[in-house]
Structures are given as structure tokens and as C-alpha cells.
Image 1 (cartoon, rainbow, N blue to C red):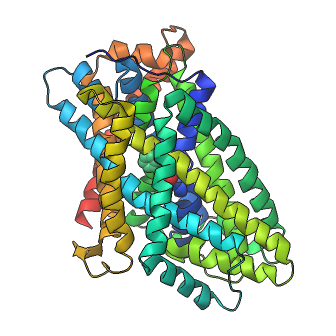
Image 2 (image 1 turned 90 degrees about the horizontal axis):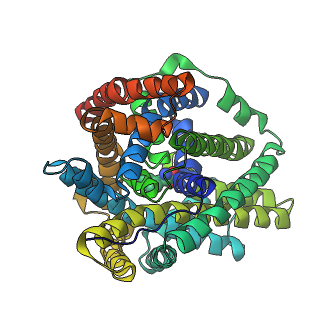
Length: 454
Ligand code: PHE
């Protein structure tokens, strides 16, 4: 079946789309609390090493596969390895992002709820416990979070419905600049607070005393999650890239923006956390229960500034979450259009209802369904754990193995060098190919086994 494929307008547009997919809740919500829980600067250094040696090769592998086939995950595997079982792995990576999108949209919905609370100035400065209670009450109620979740999902689906260039590319081009501008403003504000220096120290002075295998596997998981790897998102976006675009530059640009954003987010959040005298290891509730308290406390002295900062902050989370979530949905949309002849509208509608079902269960798992446990954890945590700890790692592993061992080496070289044959191009290729073929699979496999065993 031949379907006319959409494309991104330029190399910069491809970087913006991929960076917007990468920059999301992973950077603003997950990265600061992971760094807080696993030792600040030491975690960040390991995270950077993981991004470079493990994540970047996966990203390049996904790009090579996607752009070589100009098809989504399932179609690409079928085209590049015809008659083999690889296409089923392509199908797995269609399912994973949809599970992520379901629980991710619940958190995205919370950001809508909190944006509303910021607009109506409803945060209390009385105590951290109060603020934690507000979050617990909100997230465990039925209708508030459900309505916000559906709204969030609907916004995403409308953008995906508009198509690759008119929807995804337009939105991503706008979000990239918007997000960077906002996070820098918030960081500057946070750094100006009394007592913020302790937060800066926490992020820049490494303490390698508490390094456990868990720190390594968490840093790796975080770098995969943050760069949207192992789920076919980067593969699908790359399939919309032009053949002239330089994949190594696109990958470096995407990873660079994502890393810079995560570090700025750390500097936006930790100094404020320390300035308010709160412990950095608060866990996942850090931005929803701790920050509103910090914003409200600032409000005692400067109410308007505090209201403005909190509105901008939750707006930023919302926009970042949308630009990532659309990239997860697009993986499924590409699959349905290419393999089953769906129209874009039909594909988006079908996925909307699928995610609505699973996401609603995730949302209710904070309230009425809190007692329903799968492998000892709530439905939400199960979806999070299953995807972040296992499916993403497994998907990443399969992608590097596919690009490193299954695909024709000359095709991989052509994709990575764009046909250039100079010494520099071949050195870069040699180094990347070595990482893709040996280093990445072995280390990821070792960490994956450690995860399974723990
Ligand atoms: N990278 C996104 C973030 O940091 C999450 C994501 C995961 C997006 C997988 C797409 C696919 O929030």
C-alpha cells in the first residue's frame, strides 16, 4: 500500500520536534526529584555519561532505522528485515508509547488542575503538610483529575490530528523557544531567593559515597525516558526527516537541548527547595506538593510575583507535557495509517478512546481504585514501572541490536555520514558504530538484568 508520507519542513524543524518530544515531564518533574533522591551532582555526572555512551547510540539507531525506511516502527522493521519476526518488535514499540501516554496524560492533567489553582490563587502557605494534603486530596478525587486528564488528552489529539507539518512541527517550533524562555526566567527567580546557594551546591558538588547499582540503573532509565528512547518515537519522527538532514547533528542537537533543559530545570527547582528549607529527596510529589507551598510562601512578601511565577511554572509544565505526549501518540497513528489504511482522523479517534480507558484507570488508581494492585503496586505505578524500567530498556536494546547487527553496515554508514567519505566522517562513524554494536547492548543488557533481579 503506498501512502503519501508527510515530512518535516527542514533539519531545524526536525531538531525542534525531537527536542520538544524529549523535553517534557521527564526534565521538569522526574529529573529534579531523581537527582534529589540519588545524590545530586554525582547522579547528574552519571546521567551525562549514560546519555552519551548508552542513550545517544540508541537515538542514532532509531534515526537510522526510521530514516532509512521512511516508515513507522512496524513498517520499518518489516521493510528492512523482510520475512523475519522483527516486525513484532516494531509492534511492541507501538504499544509501549500508548501505555506511557495514558499515565503521562494523568500527570499532564494535574498540570491543568494546578494551572487553574495558580490562576485562582488557591495555594496555602500555612505548612508543607497542608500543601501535600491539597495534592493528595486533588489527585485522589474522581472528577477533577479525570476531567483535566480528558482535556489534556483532547488537546494532544487535536494537535496530532492537524498532521506532521501543520500540527506537530508548528507546535514544536513554538514550544522550544517558549519553554527555554520560561525555565530561564524561573531559574533566575529561584537563584535570587535567600538561601538558594545550598541548592546550587547540591547540584554542583558531587558526593560519590553513596553510589549503588540502583543509581546507575536509575540514571540510565532517566536518560532513556528523557530522550524518548526505546519506544519508537524518535524512529517515527526520523521517518519524516529529509534524506539530506545530518542525523548526527540532529541527534546531538536533540540530546544537547534536552540535557541543558534538565540541568536548568534542576537549577530552577533545587535552589527554591533549599531556600524553603525542604529536603531534596521528596520523590515524585516534589513539584506538585512542594513547589506550590514554596510559591505560596513567597507570596507572603510579594503576592503578585509569586502568583505569576506559579502560573508560568504550571503553564510551562503543561506545554512541555503536550509536546512530548503528541510524539507518543504519533507512533500509533503512523502505524494505523501505514499498516491498516486508517485515515489520520480515524487513527487519532481510535487511540483517543484506547488511552481514555487506560488513562482513566491510572487516574482512578489514586482514589477509588487505590486498592487494586498489580504486582504489589497501583495501576499508575505499574504502567510507569513496566514501561520505564522494562519496556523502554528492552526496546532500546532491540533497536541497537537491529541497527548494529541486522541492518546492512553500508546502509547504516550512508545514513550516519550522508555519503561523506572524509577521514572525519569515517572516524565519527567508526566510533558511533562501535558504541551501537558493542558498548550499548552489553551495558544496557547488564543493567537490564540488574533491574530484573532487584
Ligand atoms: N521524553 C519525554 C519526557 O521527558 C517522555 C517521553 C517518553 C516522550 C517516551 C516520548 C516517548 O517527558
